[in-house]
Length: 234
Image (cartoon, rainbow, N blue to C red; front, top):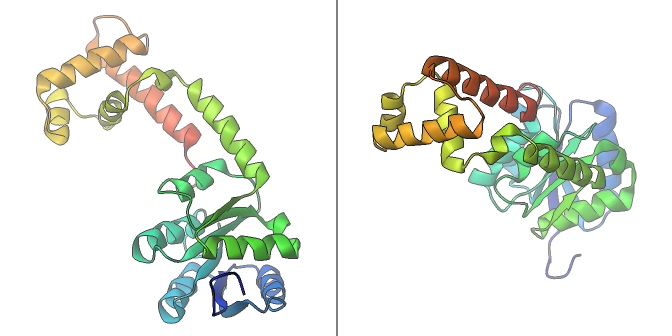
C-alpha cells in the first residue's frame, strides 16, 4: 500500500474499445494496492458506476459514446465539481493540447493526461493511478511539449495584445451585441465600453471611421482565433 493508505485504491475504468478495457483490467489485477470496481464502455455507464462505487480514481477515454469527442473531459470537469476528491486519468490516442488545457483549467491536482501508448508500460500506468489518488498530477511528456508550443502560438496571436477585459468585450462584439447591450451585460457604463472598443480597434490595427466594418473585422479575428484554439468537436 502507498504510505498513509490502509485500503486499496478503488478504480473505475471506461473505454469503448474492448481491447483497451481488457488491457487495463489485466494490468490493474497485478497490483495488490489497487482494486478494480467498475468497467464501463461509455459515458453513461461511467457516470452510473461513479455514483454506485464512489471510486478513488477514474480512468476514462477522451472519446467515447454518447458524446464522442471530449466525452472524457466533460465527465472529468463534472467530477471536479461534484466529487473533487476523485482522481482522474484521461487517456487519448493522440496529443490534443486543447483538451489537456480544458482538463487542467481548474487546477492540476488529482489529474493525469496520458497517451494510450503509455499504458502498455505497467509501471507508468500504476504510478499514474497512485499519483492522482494522492492528489498529484501526471502529464505525458508529449502533451507538455504541445502545451509549450501552444503557449508560444498564443503569444504570437494578434489578440495577445488585448487585456482580459478587452477580450471579454470582443467576445460580446462577436455575438453581435451593441455597445449598450455589452454595457448592460457586463454591468459597466456605455462610455466605458466605448473606450474599450476604441482601444481594441487601435490594438488590432483596425483604423478608419466605419465602425460597423471594424466591428465585423474584430469579430472575425476573435472567432478565427477561438476556432484555432478550441478542441475539435467542441
